[in-house]
Image 1: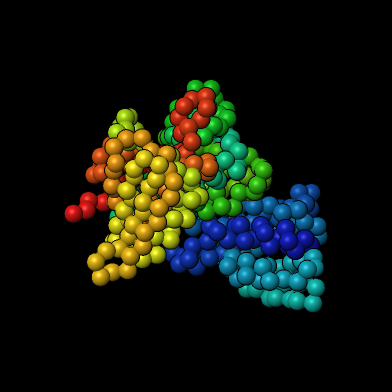
Image 2: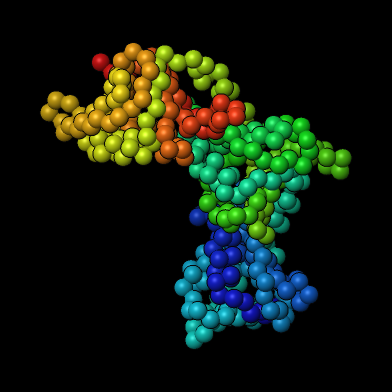
Amino acid sequence: MKFRVDRDAFADAVAWTARALPARPAVPVLAGMRLDVSDKATGQVRLSGFDYEVSARAAVDVEVEEPGDVLVSGRLLAEIARNLPDHPVELVSEGPRVLLTCGGASFTLLTLPIEDYPALPAMPDPVGSVGGGVFASAVRQVAPAASRDDTLPMLTGIHLAFSGDSLTLAATDRYRFAVREIGWRPHQSGLTTSALVPARTLTDTARSLVAGQDVGIALSTVGTAERPAGHGESMIGFDNAGRRTTTRLIDSEFVTYESRFPKDFAARAQVNAEALTEAVKRVALVADRSTPLMLSFSQGRVVLEAGSGDDAQAREVIEASYMGDDMRVAFGPHYFLDGLGAIESDDVHLGFTTPTRPAVISDTPDEVTGRPGFRYLVMPLRIT
């Protein structure tokens, strides 16, 4: 195999593909990245990585002199590609070695046994598409609520619910729920299905999306005439700007959550999102993860407090539009900030029933539907 390629395009594709490489591979070949040039006519090198759970595939336009395929250490290749000088890259395979040259720099890499490398899973059938920026933003909003406790796999995922032209993302760790509803374009009208995707994988995928490009969504749990539902493993795939990634779905039912959101509130507040976020960060400087953040709402203002007694203390007052009886409620600063950090509107809306019942943080409701696009339910702390 021999080809020449633009340095920036090659480094970008290698770095993207390396996301799928396991930190501690179960077998040595899984640390490898496969580079495949099938023939001169394609004018592309295809890069792929796989760890039996997640696969990543990217293609780069190249000048092909000789087709072929090799398997080399993916992380080493990514590190080298990131630090190459600003010159075209030439890569040549010579028996058990690969020679990479770029300007005055050259590297010799040992190859891994490509015959032992597993076949990547096929991309599932496409079911629709969504704007890349909107999807990445939605994932960013709900991902903090997903659990990191691998002993409860169901809670480590982000639930994607497809219903007509609506896509709802939800995550929970039992102490809070984050829900974001966006529009998408299904290939089948009236499609109703769902998928529970590992949160870490979906977050990595969302971060690497190419701005301004749509994301194609493929799902093996949706049946077709050629491939009925349930054929093979349940998988989801994402296709963005020629880059494809697949991952296994979490085989578990997601918790029902809609009934947990209060329908009516005894008190409501509307506060400038940036002002409240900055105030919480300042007051929380004196609080650790177990110290409550106190919020006291009354007409026209909210008082934020943390610390008491012999501990360091902080207090700040900011303006707020408030309806209801005066209320004093406590939250864990980290949980409260995760909700505020997901708000994309100028103002944040807070709904309360009682100081000990779940509160809802949301963005400004849509003028047409009257519903907020993002909702974050969080349990207050009980205080004496």
